[in-house]
Image 1 (tube, one colour):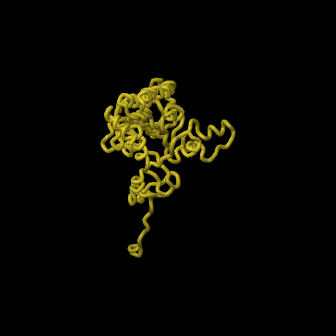
Image 2 (cartoon, one colour; image 1 turned 120 degrees about the horizontal axis):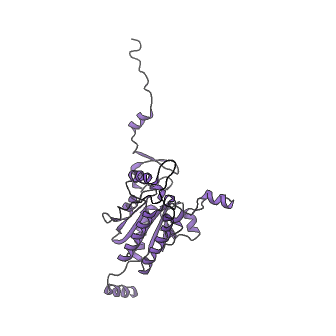
Image 3 (cartoon, one colour; image 1 turned 30 degrees about the vertical axis):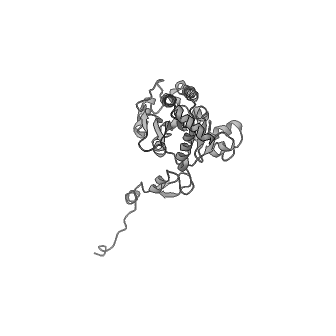
Length: 298
């Protein structure tokens, strides 16, 4: 009986804590480590309210942030990569890796593309999702971006690319490398109809993507702190046998050296791109054009 009224301590386990505090209540910043309410974090567009770190977001999230409500119409969603080289590795083959990644991300490849508008101004968009095989540029990636550019040229509207990548996809060899030239050539059609390519570089943007179409746009924007370059920092330091500056290959470094046009916080990105689209907006008819010219001289 002496033990009848004695309270035995309950063992603490992580599983009990997980039941008490759901996983979706708090989020931890990958940069400063501070905890933030998940709702507050989402309301801030997944930018840390403590240090301003811009977390990576998916292509679908980018479209939801930038495009007018219900304006996005996806194109080429059914395009899927194939294992054209019969690529295998010790763990799995390329075909199995594609299938597993598609199931996990809910997309068929890196790029989500389509037609949309910002503040009523039409444009074509091709947005990368780094979560799909590190945003690597394969044949489907290149085909989707090239088709988005061609649609923009046919419609006479700008094209916006949101670029996050680790480079060309090694599983496709030369078929991946040729996409750099393919997209760059497609952009000449857009130039002929005098419509701009606006390139947004987000963290991280490396390899063939940063070395080709993403860096030859008419306007190049980047998010604060985004890592941008061709080879990684460690590779460069080992090659030149020198230490690089602390902020080397960041968006701010690129802006200082005149390689991009602006560093824009995510909260200002929609308004900034809207202003850029208005600069390139064309009168709809010759009468409208005459009115526009007259108004400009008044």
